[in-house]
Image (cartoon, rainbow, N blue to C red; front, side, top):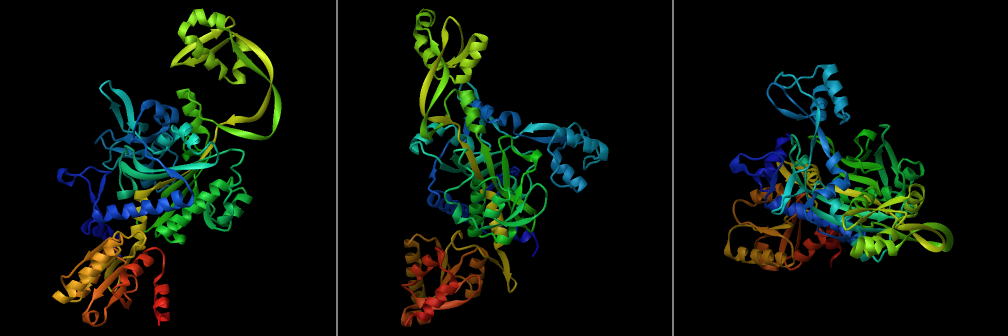
Length: 573
Protein backbone atom coordinates (compact mmCIF):
# COMPACT_ATOMS: atom_id res chain seq x y z
CA UNK A 1 0.00 0.00 0.00
CA UNK A 2 1.56 3.39 -0.99
CA UNK A 3 2.85 5.42 1.95
CA UNK A 4 0.77 8.48 1.05
CA UNK A 5 -2.48 6.49 1.51
CA UNK A 6 -2.42 7.05 5.27
CA UNK A 7 -1.78 10.78 4.86
CA UNK A 8 -4.69 10.97 2.40
CA UNK A 9 -7.06 9.27 4.87
CA UNK A 10 -5.94 11.44 7.79
CA UNK A 11 -6.46 14.71 5.96
CA UNK A 12 -9.54 13.76 3.91
CA UNK A 13 -11.42 12.00 6.70
CA UNK A 14 -10.89 14.53 9.47
CA UNK A 15 -7.96 13.30 11.57
CA UNK A 16 -5.24 15.88 10.84
CA UNK A 17 -4.46 18.91 8.72
CA UNK A 18 -1.54 21.35 8.47
CA UNK A 19 -2.03 24.39 10.69
CA UNK A 20 -2.70 27.85 9.27
CA UNK A 21 -3.38 26.51 5.76
CA UNK A 22 -5.23 29.66 4.70
CA UNK A 23 -2.02 31.63 5.30
CA UNK A 24 0.25 29.17 3.54
CA UNK A 25 0.96 27.01 6.61
CA UNK A 26 3.83 26.95 9.09
CA UNK A 27 6.05 23.87 9.21
CA UNK A 28 6.15 21.98 12.49
CA UNK A 29 2.51 22.63 13.42
CA UNK A 30 -0.55 20.41 12.84
CA UNK A 31 -4.21 20.78 13.73
CA UNK A 32 -6.04 17.78 15.12
CA UNK A 33 -9.33 17.67 13.24
CA UNK A 34 -12.46 16.15 14.87
CA UNK A 35 -11.50 12.46 14.65
CA UNK A 36 -7.81 13.09 15.36
CA UNK A 37 -8.62 15.11 18.45
CA UNK A 38 -10.83 12.32 19.79
CA UNK A 39 -8.21 9.67 19.03
CA UNK A 40 -5.55 11.73 20.81
CA UNK A 41 -7.71 12.16 23.92
CA UNK A 42 -8.44 8.42 24.00
CA UNK A 43 -4.71 7.63 23.89
CA UNK A 44 -4.10 10.12 26.69
CA UNK A 45 -6.88 8.61 28.79
CA UNK A 46 -5.49 5.11 28.27
CA UNK A 47 -2.12 6.46 29.43
CA UNK A 48 -3.84 7.83 32.52
CA UNK A 49 -5.23 4.37 33.22
CA UNK A 50 -1.69 2.97 33.20
CA UNK A 51 -0.01 5.69 35.25
CA UNK A 52 -2.71 7.37 37.34
CA UNK A 53 -5.09 4.49 38.05
CA UNK A 54 -2.73 1.49 38.03
CA UNK A 55 0.38 3.16 39.45
CA UNK A 56 -1.52 5.42 41.86
CA UNK A 57 0.24 8.57 40.69
CA UNK A 58 -1.59 11.89 40.88
CA UNK A 59 -1.82 14.29 37.94
CA UNK A 60 -0.82 17.95 38.02
CA UNK A 61 -1.05 20.78 35.49
CA UNK A 62 1.68 23.43 35.46
CA UNK A 63 2.15 26.54 33.25
CA UNK A 64 3.67 26.22 29.80
CA UNK A 65 5.72 29.41 30.33
CA UNK A 66 8.39 29.64 33.03
CA UNK A 67 10.88 32.35 34.07
CA UNK A 68 14.43 32.04 32.80
CA UNK A 69 15.84 30.92 36.18
CA UNK A 70 13.95 27.62 35.91
CA UNK A 71 15.78 26.70 32.72
CA UNK A 72 19.10 28.10 33.89
CA UNK A 73 18.90 25.72 36.85
CA UNK A 74 17.74 22.77 34.72
CA UNK A 75 20.62 23.25 32.29
CA UNK A 76 18.42 23.90 29.27
CA UNK A 77 19.67 27.45 28.69
CA UNK A 78 23.22 26.14 28.40
CA UNK A 79 22.67 22.69 26.91
CA UNK A 80 19.38 22.49 25.03
CA UNK A 81 20.55 23.20 21.52
CA UNK A 82 21.02 21.43 18.19
CA UNK A 83 23.91 21.76 15.74
CA UNK A 84 23.04 23.86 12.68
CA UNK A 85 24.87 24.81 9.51
CA UNK A 86 23.94 27.36 6.83
CA UNK A 87 24.78 27.54 3.15
CA UNK A 88 26.94 30.53 2.25
CA UNK A 89 25.36 30.66 -1.22
CA UNK A 90 21.58 30.21 -0.79
CA UNK A 91 21.29 30.79 2.95
CA UNK A 92 19.40 27.56 3.69
CA UNK A 93 19.89 26.37 7.27
CA UNK A 94 20.03 22.68 8.14
CA UNK A 95 20.24 20.66 11.29
CA UNK A 96 23.82 19.59 10.74
CA UNK A 97 23.76 16.00 12.05
CA UNK A 98 20.53 15.11 10.19
CA UNK A 99 21.80 16.71 6.97
CA UNK A 100 25.05 14.75 7.13
CA UNK A 101 23.23 11.51 7.92
CA UNK A 102 21.28 11.94 4.67
CA UNK A 103 24.30 12.99 2.63
CA UNK A 104 26.68 10.32 3.95
CA UNK A 105 24.21 7.52 4.64
CA UNK A 106 25.38 7.40 8.26
CA UNK A 107 23.42 6.77 11.46
CA UNK A 108 23.58 8.22 14.99
CA UNK A 109 26.21 10.85 14.23
CA UNK A 110 27.61 12.78 17.18
CA UNK A 111 25.78 16.11 17.65
CA UNK A 112 29.03 17.85 18.66
CA UNK A 113 29.73 20.78 16.27
CA UNK A 114 33.46 20.02 16.14
CA UNK A 115 32.86 16.44 14.99
CA UNK A 116 30.34 17.50 12.35
CA UNK A 117 32.56 20.33 11.10
CA UNK A 118 35.40 17.87 10.62
CA UNK A 119 33.15 15.52 8.65
CA UNK A 120 32.00 18.33 6.35
CA UNK A 121 35.58 19.31 5.61
CA UNK A 122 36.95 15.78 5.24
CA UNK A 123 34.11 14.56 2.99
CA UNK A 124 33.66 17.78 1.07
CA UNK A 125 29.94 17.96 1.86
CA UNK A 126 28.11 20.82 0.15
CA UNK A 127 24.60 22.27 0.23
CA UNK A 128 21.90 20.80 -2.01
CA UNK A 129 22.31 23.88 -4.21
CA UNK A 130 26.02 23.11 -4.54
CA UNK A 131 27.06 26.00 -2.32
CA UNK A 132 29.70 25.89 0.41
CA UNK A 133 28.55 25.23 3.97
CA UNK A 134 29.52 27.61 6.78
CA UNK A 135 30.60 26.84 10.33
CA UNK A 136 28.58 24.38 12.39
CA UNK A 137 27.14 26.15 15.43
CA UNK A 138 24.68 25.42 18.23
CA UNK A 139 21.15 26.86 18.09
CA UNK A 140 18.84 27.00 21.11
CA UNK A 141 15.68 24.91 20.78
CA UNK A 142 13.66 27.01 23.24
CA UNK A 143 11.14 29.67 22.29
CA UNK A 144 11.93 32.79 24.32
CA UNK A 145 9.35 35.31 25.50
CA UNK A 146 8.88 38.07 28.05
CA UNK A 147 6.62 37.96 31.09
CA UNK A 148 4.70 41.05 32.13
CA UNK A 149 5.14 44.72 31.33
CA UNK A 150 8.56 44.72 32.96
CA UNK A 151 9.84 42.31 30.36
CA UNK A 152 11.04 39.51 32.67
CA UNK A 153 12.67 36.93 30.42
CA UNK A 154 10.98 33.54 30.10
CA UNK A 155 10.69 30.51 27.85
CA UNK A 156 8.00 28.19 26.58
CA UNK A 157 8.77 24.91 28.30
CA UNK A 158 10.68 22.34 26.21
CA UNK A 159 9.39 19.57 28.52
CA UNK A 160 6.67 19.34 31.16
CA UNK A 161 9.10 17.95 33.75
CA UNK A 162 10.49 21.16 35.26
CA UNK A 163 7.08 22.31 36.50
CA UNK A 164 6.90 19.11 38.54
CA UNK A 165 10.44 19.40 39.89
CA UNK A 166 9.98 22.93 41.22
CA UNK A 167 6.79 21.70 42.96
CA UNK A 168 8.76 19.02 44.83
CA UNK A 169 8.50 20.50 48.36
CA UNK A 170 4.70 20.64 48.09
CA UNK A 171 4.47 17.24 46.40
CA UNK A 172 6.63 15.66 49.12
CA UNK A 173 4.28 17.06 51.74
CA UNK A 174 1.20 15.93 49.75
CA UNK A 175 2.54 12.36 49.69
CA UNK A 176 3.00 12.53 53.49
CA UNK A 177 6.79 12.62 53.11
CA UNK A 178 7.03 9.01 51.97
CA UNK A 179 9.04 7.67 49.04
CA UNK A 180 8.74 6.39 46.40
CA UNK A 181 5.96 8.47 44.88
CA UNK A 182 5.09 9.57 41.38
CA UNK A 183 3.43 12.55 39.79
CA UNK A 184 2.30 12.85 36.17
CA UNK A 185 1.42 15.54 33.69
CA UNK A 186 0.01 15.59 30.17
CA UNK A 187 0.53 18.86 28.37
CA UNK A 188 2.06 20.89 25.59
CA UNK A 189 5.77 21.38 25.15
CA UNK A 190 7.63 23.50 22.61
CA UNK A 191 10.86 23.10 20.68
CA UNK A 192 11.99 25.52 18.02
CA UNK A 193 13.13 22.84 15.60
CA UNK A 194 15.47 24.03 12.89
CA UNK A 195 13.87 22.18 9.99
CA UNK A 196 10.87 20.15 11.16
CA UNK A 197 9.91 17.37 8.76
CA UNK A 198 8.31 13.94 8.97
CA UNK A 199 4.82 15.15 9.89
CA UNK A 200 3.92 14.32 13.49
CA UNK A 201 7.39 12.99 14.28
CA UNK A 202 9.08 16.37 14.58
CA UNK A 203 6.83 19.18 15.70
CA UNK A 204 7.47 22.61 17.18
CA UNK A 205 4.46 22.24 19.49
CA UNK A 206 3.62 18.77 20.73
CA UNK A 207 2.04 16.85 23.59
CA UNK A 208 4.04 15.04 26.25
CA UNK A 209 2.82 12.62 28.88
CA UNK A 210 5.47 12.43 31.58
CA UNK A 211 5.78 10.66 34.90
CA UNK A 212 8.35 11.72 37.48
CA UNK A 213 8.94 8.97 40.03
CA UNK A 214 10.87 10.17 43.09
CA UNK A 215 12.86 7.41 44.78
CA UNK A 216 15.43 6.95 47.53
CA UNK A 217 18.74 6.33 45.68
CA UNK A 218 19.60 3.63 48.22
CA UNK A 219 16.41 1.74 47.35
CA UNK A 220 16.01 2.14 43.59
CA UNK A 221 17.69 -1.15 42.76
CA UNK A 222 14.55 -2.92 44.05
CA UNK A 223 11.06 -1.99 42.83
CA UNK A 224 8.33 -3.13 45.27
CA UNK A 225 6.11 -4.36 42.42
CA UNK A 226 8.81 -5.80 40.16
CA UNK A 227 7.31 -9.31 40.30
CA UNK A 228 4.54 -8.08 37.99
CA UNK A 229 7.02 -7.61 35.13
CA UNK A 230 9.99 -9.81 36.10
CA UNK A 231 9.19 -12.26 33.28
CA UNK A 232 8.25 -9.63 30.68
CA UNK A 233 10.35 -10.15 27.52
CA UNK A 234 12.09 -7.02 26.28
CA UNK A 235 13.95 -6.49 23.02
CA UNK A 236 17.02 -4.49 24.03
CA UNK A 237 19.68 -2.74 21.97
CA UNK A 238 22.44 -1.66 24.39
CA UNK A 239 25.30 0.62 23.35
CA UNK A 240 27.24 -2.35 21.98
CA UNK A 241 24.66 -2.59 19.19
CA UNK A 242 23.75 -6.23 19.72
CA UNK A 243 20.05 -7.09 19.85
CA UNK A 244 19.05 -9.01 22.99
CA UNK A 245 15.76 -10.71 23.89
CA UNK A 246 15.68 -10.93 27.68
CA UNK A 247 13.21 -10.90 30.53
CA UNK A 248 13.24 -7.77 32.68
CA UNK A 249 14.70 -9.84 35.52
CA UNK A 250 17.51 -11.25 33.35
CA UNK A 251 18.37 -7.77 32.05
CA UNK A 252 18.84 -6.50 35.62
CA UNK A 253 20.74 -9.58 36.80
CA UNK A 254 23.16 -9.31 33.86
CA UNK A 255 23.72 -5.59 34.50
CA UNK A 256 22.31 -4.50 31.13
CA UNK A 257 19.67 -2.51 32.98
CA UNK A 258 21.03 -0.81 36.12
CA UNK A 259 18.14 -1.47 38.48
CA UNK A 260 14.57 -2.72 38.81
CA UNK A 261 12.96 0.73 38.71
CA UNK A 262 14.19 1.37 35.17
CA UNK A 263 13.33 -2.18 34.09
CA UNK A 264 9.84 -1.97 35.61
CA UNK A 265 8.90 1.19 33.72
CA UNK A 266 10.35 -0.13 30.47
CA UNK A 267 8.10 -3.19 30.77
CA UNK A 268 5.15 -1.01 31.83
CA UNK A 269 5.77 1.17 28.76
CA UNK A 270 5.80 -1.87 26.49
CA UNK A 271 2.45 -3.02 27.87
CA UNK A 272 0.96 0.43 27.27
CA UNK A 273 2.22 0.60 23.68
CA UNK A 274 0.74 -2.83 22.96
CA UNK A 275 -2.56 -1.89 24.61
CA UNK A 276 -2.81 1.23 22.49
CA UNK A 277 -2.42 -0.83 19.31
CA UNK A 278 1.28 -1.32 18.48
CA UNK A 279 2.32 -4.98 17.98
CA UNK A 280 4.98 -6.24 20.40
CA UNK A 281 7.26 -7.36 17.57
CA UNK A 282 7.52 -3.74 16.39
CA UNK A 283 8.75 -2.44 19.77
CA UNK A 284 12.35 -2.30 20.99
CA UNK A 285 14.36 -0.37 23.59
CA UNK A 286 17.59 1.29 22.49
CA UNK A 287 20.10 2.63 24.98
CA UNK A 288 21.39 6.14 24.38
CA UNK A 289 24.99 6.39 23.28
CA UNK A 290 27.27 8.34 25.60
CA UNK A 291 27.42 11.38 23.31
CA UNK A 292 23.63 11.57 22.82
CA UNK A 293 22.77 11.31 26.51
CA UNK A 294 20.86 14.29 27.88
CA UNK A 295 22.85 16.45 30.30
CA UNK A 296 20.66 15.36 33.22
CA UNK A 297 20.64 11.59 32.60
CA UNK A 298 22.73 8.81 34.10
CA UNK A 299 21.09 6.25 31.81
CA UNK A 300 18.35 6.47 29.20
CA UNK A 301 16.56 3.99 26.94
CA UNK A 302 14.26 4.94 24.08
CA UNK A 303 11.21 2.85 23.30
CA UNK A 304 11.25 2.72 19.51
CA UNK A 305 8.55 1.56 17.09
CA UNK A 306 9.31 0.13 13.66
CA UNK A 307 7.33 2.18 11.12
CA UNK A 308 6.99 1.44 7.42
CA UNK A 309 7.69 5.00 6.38
CA UNK A 310 10.44 6.17 8.76
CA UNK A 311 12.03 2.99 10.13
CA UNK A 312 12.67 2.84 13.88
CA UNK A 313 11.15 5.89 15.56
CA UNK A 314 11.61 6.96 19.20
CA UNK A 315 8.23 7.36 20.92
CA UNK A 316 9.19 7.18 24.63
CA UNK A 317 12.32 8.08 26.57
CA UNK A 318 12.85 6.34 29.92
CA UNK A 319 15.61 8.07 31.88
CA UNK A 320 17.30 7.83 35.23
CA UNK A 321 17.72 11.56 35.93
CA UNK A 322 19.40 10.88 39.32
CA UNK A 323 19.23 13.94 41.64
CA UNK A 324 20.34 16.38 38.94
CA UNK A 325 17.17 18.47 38.74
CA UNK A 326 16.36 18.74 42.44
CA UNK A 327 19.95 19.65 43.32
CA UNK A 328 20.06 22.25 40.56
CA UNK A 329 16.82 23.95 41.63
CA UNK A 330 17.84 23.85 45.30
CA UNK A 331 21.18 25.47 44.47
CA UNK A 332 19.72 28.33 42.42
CA UNK A 333 16.49 28.96 44.36
CA UNK A 334 17.84 28.41 47.88
CA UNK A 335 14.75 26.28 48.66
CA UNK A 336 15.44 22.86 50.11
CA UNK A 337 14.54 19.99 47.74
CA UNK A 338 15.33 17.06 50.03
CA UNK A 339 13.61 14.13 51.69
CA UNK A 340 14.23 12.45 55.05
CA UNK A 341 15.48 8.90 55.52
CA UNK A 342 14.72 7.23 58.86
CA UNK A 343 17.51 5.11 60.36
CA UNK A 344 16.61 1.67 61.69
CA UNK A 345 18.44 2.62 64.88
CA UNK A 346 19.40 6.06 66.13
CA UNK A 347 23.10 6.95 65.91
CA UNK A 348 25.21 9.41 67.84
CA UNK A 349 27.46 11.55 65.73
CA UNK A 350 29.99 14.26 66.62
CA UNK A 351 29.49 17.18 64.29
CA UNK A 352 30.68 20.73 63.72
CA UNK A 353 28.21 23.57 63.43
CA UNK A 354 28.28 27.33 63.17
CA UNK A 355 26.78 29.37 66.00
CA UNK A 356 25.73 32.99 65.30
CA UNK A 357 26.98 35.75 67.61
CA UNK A 358 23.79 37.78 67.95
CA UNK A 359 25.53 40.51 69.99
CA UNK A 360 27.45 41.38 66.82
CA UNK A 361 24.85 40.43 64.18
CA UNK A 362 22.06 42.46 65.86
CA UNK A 363 23.70 45.89 65.86
CA UNK A 364 25.34 45.37 62.48
CA UNK A 365 22.44 43.91 60.48
CA UNK A 366 19.47 45.05 62.62
CA UNK A 367 16.17 43.57 61.39
CA UNK A 368 17.94 41.18 59.02
CA UNK A 369 19.91 39.53 61.85
CA UNK A 370 17.29 36.85 62.74
CA UNK A 371 17.07 35.74 59.10
CA UNK A 372 20.87 35.58 58.87
CA UNK A 373 20.96 33.44 62.00
CA UNK A 374 18.30 31.16 60.52
CA UNK A 375 20.28 30.80 57.29
CA UNK A 376 23.46 29.97 59.24
CA UNK A 377 21.69 27.24 61.20
CA UNK A 378 20.66 25.57 57.95
CA UNK A 379 24.23 25.39 56.62
CA UNK A 380 25.67 21.86 56.27
CA UNK A 381 28.63 20.63 58.28
CA UNK A 382 30.88 21.20 55.27
CA UNK A 383 30.29 24.95 55.65
CA UNK A 384 31.56 24.81 59.25
CA UNK A 385 34.66 22.95 58.09
CA UNK A 386 35.25 25.54 55.38
CA UNK A 387 34.75 28.37 57.89
CA UNK A 388 37.32 26.84 60.23
CA UNK A 389 39.87 26.86 57.39
CA UNK A 390 39.10 30.27 55.88
CA UNK A 391 37.42 32.28 58.62
CA UNK A 392 34.53 33.32 56.36
CA UNK A 393 31.23 31.98 55.02
CA UNK A 394 28.59 33.30 52.65
CA UNK A 395 24.83 32.93 53.16
CA UNK A 396 21.88 33.87 50.97
CA UNK A 397 19.25 35.98 52.73
CA UNK A 398 16.22 37.13 50.73
CA UNK A 399 18.24 36.95 47.52
CA UNK A 400 21.15 38.93 48.96
CA UNK A 401 24.59 37.44 49.54
CA UNK A 402 25.92 38.17 53.05
CA UNK A 403 29.56 37.44 53.94
CA UNK A 404 30.18 36.59 57.60
CA UNK A 405 33.49 36.39 59.42
CA UNK A 406 34.92 35.30 62.78
CA UNK A 407 33.28 38.26 64.54
CA UNK A 408 29.86 36.99 63.54
CA UNK A 409 30.21 33.24 64.07
CA UNK A 410 32.02 30.59 66.05
CA UNK A 411 32.54 26.87 65.42
CA UNK A 412 31.05 24.50 67.96
CA UNK A 413 31.56 20.73 68.22
CA UNK A 414 28.58 18.82 69.56
CA UNK A 415 27.31 15.29 69.80
CA UNK A 416 23.97 14.81 68.08
CA UNK A 417 21.66 11.87 68.33
CA UNK A 418 20.34 11.28 64.81
CA UNK A 419 17.26 9.25 63.98
CA UNK A 420 17.72 9.80 60.25
CA UNK A 421 19.24 12.03 57.60
CA UNK A 422 18.23 14.27 54.74
CA UNK A 423 19.03 13.33 51.13
CA UNK A 424 18.14 14.39 47.61
CA UNK A 425 15.80 11.91 45.88
CA UNK A 426 16.57 10.45 42.46
CA UNK A 427 14.05 10.59 39.63
CA UNK A 428 13.01 7.92 37.13
CA UNK A 429 11.23 9.51 34.18
CA UNK A 430 9.19 7.82 31.46
CA UNK A 431 8.46 10.56 28.91
CA UNK A 432 5.92 9.77 26.17
CA UNK A 433 5.56 11.64 22.89
CA UNK A 434 1.80 11.40 22.36
CA UNK A 435 1.88 12.71 18.76
CA UNK A 436 4.47 10.15 17.69
CA UNK A 437 2.57 7.36 19.41
CA UNK A 438 -0.60 8.48 17.65
CA UNK A 439 1.16 8.31 14.27
CA UNK A 440 2.54 4.83 15.05
CA UNK A 441 -0.90 3.63 16.12
CA UNK A 442 -2.46 4.87 12.88
CA UNK A 443 0.23 3.34 10.70
CA UNK A 444 -0.04 -0.02 12.49
CA UNK A 445 -3.84 0.10 12.14
CA UNK A 446 -3.98 0.75 8.40
CA UNK A 447 -4.95 -2.38 6.43
CA UNK A 448 -6.73 -3.37 3.25
CA UNK A 449 -9.61 -5.80 2.69
CA UNK A 450 -10.97 -6.59 -0.76
CA UNK A 451 -9.37 -3.46 -2.17
CA UNK A 452 -10.84 -1.19 0.51
CA UNK A 453 -9.00 0.58 3.30
CA UNK A 454 -9.66 -0.39 6.89
CA UNK A 455 -8.31 1.43 9.92
CA UNK A 456 -8.09 -1.31 12.56
CA UNK A 457 -7.92 0.91 15.61
CA UNK A 458 -8.43 -0.87 18.90
CA UNK A 459 -11.92 -0.23 20.30
CA UNK A 460 -10.43 1.38 23.44
CA UNK A 461 -8.87 4.22 21.41
CA UNK A 462 -11.12 4.42 18.34
CA UNK A 463 -12.67 7.93 18.13
CA UNK A 464 -16.12 6.58 17.24
CA UNK A 465 -17.21 3.33 18.86
CA UNK A 466 -20.24 2.40 16.75
CA UNK A 467 -22.16 3.22 13.59
CA UNK A 468 -25.89 2.72 13.29
CA UNK A 469 -27.63 2.20 9.93
CA UNK A 470 -31.15 1.51 8.74
CA UNK A 471 -30.79 -1.05 5.94
CA UNK A 472 -32.68 1.25 3.60
CA UNK A 473 -34.16 4.71 4.01
CA UNK A 474 -37.62 3.72 5.28
CA UNK A 475 -39.36 5.57 8.11
CA UNK A 476 -40.11 2.48 10.21
CA UNK A 477 -36.46 1.30 9.98
CA UNK A 478 -35.08 4.77 10.68
CA UNK A 479 -37.24 5.10 13.78
CA UNK A 480 -35.77 1.93 15.33
CA UNK A 481 -32.24 2.79 14.19
CA UNK A 482 -32.40 6.27 15.73
CA UNK A 483 -33.57 4.80 19.03
CA UNK A 484 -30.60 2.39 19.08
CA UNK A 485 -28.30 5.30 18.13
CA UNK A 486 -29.60 7.46 21.00
CA UNK A 487 -29.24 4.60 23.50
CA UNK A 488 -25.60 3.95 22.53
CA UNK A 489 -24.77 7.64 22.99
CA UNK A 490 -26.63 7.77 26.31
CA UNK A 491 -24.11 5.24 27.65
CA UNK A 492 -21.23 7.62 26.90
CA UNK A 493 -20.03 6.09 23.64
CA UNK A 494 -19.52 8.31 20.57
CA UNK A 495 -21.49 6.97 17.60
CA UNK A 496 -22.50 8.01 14.07
CA UNK A 497 -25.78 7.56 12.22
CA UNK A 498 -25.91 7.24 8.43
CA UNK A 499 -28.89 6.51 6.16
CA UNK A 500 -27.47 7.58 2.79
CA UNK A 501 -26.01 5.44 -0.05
CA UNK A 502 -25.90 1.66 -0.19
CA UNK A 503 -25.17 -0.32 2.96
CA UNK A 504 -21.86 -1.47 1.44
CA UNK A 505 -20.67 2.11 0.94
CA UNK A 506 -21.69 3.00 4.47
CA UNK A 507 -19.70 0.07 5.87
CA UNK A 508 -16.68 1.17 3.80
CA UNK A 509 -16.91 4.75 5.09
CA UNK A 510 -16.90 3.77 8.75
CA UNK A 511 -14.23 1.08 8.21
CA UNK A 512 -11.93 3.76 6.82
CA UNK A 513 -12.23 5.93 9.94
CA UNK A 514 -11.75 3.01 12.32
CA UNK A 515 -15.28 2.51 13.73
CA UNK A 516 -15.02 -0.98 15.29
CA UNK A 517 -18.71 -1.96 15.31
CA UNK A 518 -21.70 -1.29 13.07
CA UNK A 519 -25.36 -1.94 13.89
CA UNK A 520 -27.84 -2.46 11.05
CA UNK A 521 -31.61 -2.34 11.46
CA UNK A 522 -33.43 -4.41 8.82
CA UNK A 523 -36.93 -5.72 8.25
CA UNK A 524 -36.35 -8.68 10.56
CA UNK A 525 -35.70 -6.12 13.31
CA UNK A 526 -39.32 -4.99 12.99
CA UNK A 527 -40.52 -8.59 13.43
CA UNK A 528 -38.44 -9.83 16.36
CA UNK A 529 -36.54 -6.85 17.82
CA UNK A 530 -33.07 -8.08 16.73
CA UNK A 531 -30.38 -6.26 14.74
CA UNK A 532 -27.09 -7.25 13.12
CA UNK A 533 -23.86 -6.32 14.90
CA UNK A 534 -20.88 -6.21 12.50
CA UNK A 535 -17.19 -6.54 13.41
CA UNK A 536 -15.01 -4.15 11.43
CA UNK A 537 -11.87 -6.30 11.31
CA UNK A 538 -13.50 -9.51 10.03
CA UNK A 539 -16.73 -8.11 8.52
CA UNK A 540 -18.47 -10.93 10.41
CA UNK A 541 -22.03 -10.25 11.59
CA UNK A 542 -24.04 -11.68 14.47
CA UNK A 543 -27.68 -11.19 15.33
CA UNK A 544 -28.48 -9.75 18.76
CA UNK A 545 -31.38 -8.08 20.52
CA UNK A 546 -31.62 -4.35 19.83
CA UNK A 547 -31.82 -3.62 23.57
CA UNK A 548 -28.66 -5.65 24.21
CA UNK A 549 -26.55 -3.73 21.68
CA UNK A 550 -25.34 -0.77 23.81
CA UNK A 551 -24.21 -3.06 26.65
CA UNK A 552 -22.44 -5.46 24.27
CA UNK A 553 -20.62 -2.63 22.49
CA UNK A 554 -19.53 -1.20 25.84
CA UNK A 555 -18.11 -4.57 26.90
CA UNK A 556 -16.32 -4.94 23.55
CA UNK A 557 -14.80 -1.49 23.99
CA UNK A 558 -13.68 -2.37 27.52
CA UNK A 559 -11.75 -5.47 26.49
CA UNK A 560 -14.09 -8.33 25.62
CA UNK A 561 -12.95 -9.93 22.35
CA UNK A 562 -15.17 -10.65 19.36
CA UNK A 563 -14.49 -14.39 19.84
CA UNK A 564 -15.70 -14.14 23.44
CA UNK A 565 -18.87 -12.43 22.21
CA UNK A 566 -19.54 -15.23 19.71
CA UNK A 567 -19.02 -17.85 22.43
CA UNK A 568 -21.40 -15.95 24.72
CA UNK A 569 -24.07 -15.83 22.01
CA UNK A 570 -23.59 -19.50 21.12
CA UNK A 571 -24.05 -20.50 24.78
CA UNK A 572 -27.21 -18.44 25.20
CA UNK A 573 -30.46 -20.49 25.37
